[in-house]
Image (cartoon, rainbow over all chains, first blue to last red; front, side, top):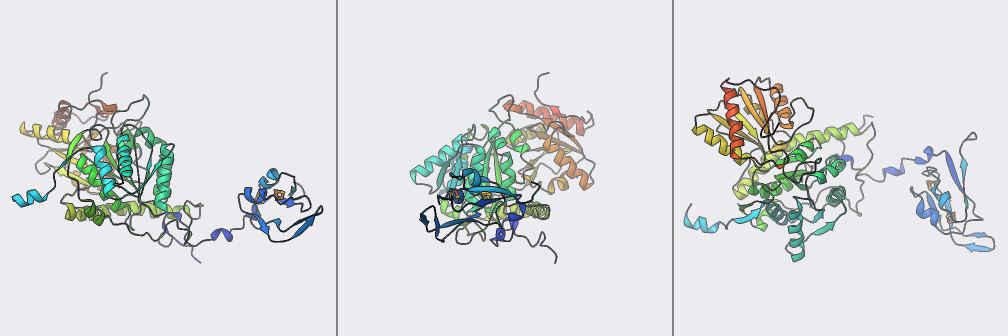
Length: 105
Length: 401
Ligand code: SF4
Ligand code: SF4
């Protein structure tokens, strides 16, 4: 199929048919992946707030750890996580480890 | 004019160029003004602040931290569908440089007043066209006024032109620092109701709207960028015809109209001197004085700098000798003058063999007296009579060696 040209595209590179970012799975860019240790995680929400790609999901999923009960669970959406490591750096209890995607790294 | 007609017409207001611009912005019912002060533009946004404070204009007045932010804020406002305005001069325009391309590339409709002033260094707050000329390749439509009435009118014409669906480009309205900005002239102000009827606010099909989300300012990778740039180039080209239509509608409403390029005393002239900006009047006076001495020189006035009007070469190609008066130096370029480079290129593409003499004048606010303008006109006349060679380099009027 011919790609849209000068006459077809909406001006100014404005994207008028959102959300095109959903189809652009940036997870393939990742070379290191964040892995959350659910037993250490204190559900502070900091990783969720800091992730530049909104790739930390807050799920309504109860979890028990260290004698504490939580009503939510944080998980990484690997379809879009680029592996920047910000969540791991910001986590106050070091519950997130960055693991190489490829052995050699 | 009958007595009744005379009485019907409102009295002229004595206004500085800057206040004329502010009144035009008020009359266009602008929604967002982002302001950062810089000499000699400041009294535009000061007057607008007064209008907003007094309730005469219902607008958001944003105090931003730099000109870079002033234009960025105006772009954001315009992208959300608001009618936006900002104003600047010289270093302020230079600081906006990257944002100028973003405004035109994002196809943002808005108007910015440029009160022309020399660029540093050395620091100089006085008038020349170095800021205007250096921004001519940023994709903006550029209208250059020659007096305060035109400054008022071009703001109004600017919004109409900018917001046309076949244009959607930012418009820069230039007026000369001090010579217009701080000089009071009689200006015919129009009834704001009538101005608003001429530039009605229409809902644009695509704006930043939480109800109907879109993305502005996206990435254009090598697969896409090219197409958007061609769209932009075509829109700027269309702006010429669009301007003519808007200008003729403006004349039906208000009885004044401005050709993108106008020739005065063209019919019997041996040469044409091309000018733009506030010194048009000075050169016109000199041309008229010289004509009384029998020197048949005409005047060409450029009021639209971008897009460069196609009729410039069409009209000028009929003359063997052209003079170009430029109030800016185009360092290191083929002719040393922005205006000459454009005119020479357009004449060459037209297949014309007219010879051009460049006159650089008024640099850094160096006063332009009638004697200076007369010197230019007489020099051009001597060239047209082959009493003098066409110089390859610009003639620097009034410089001390
Ligand atoms: S690594 Fe970066 S992108 Fe991935 S979840 Fe953490 S903060 Fe988000
Ligand atoms: S920042 Fe660490 S502790 Fe806080 S929610 Fe994220 S993983 Fe859990």
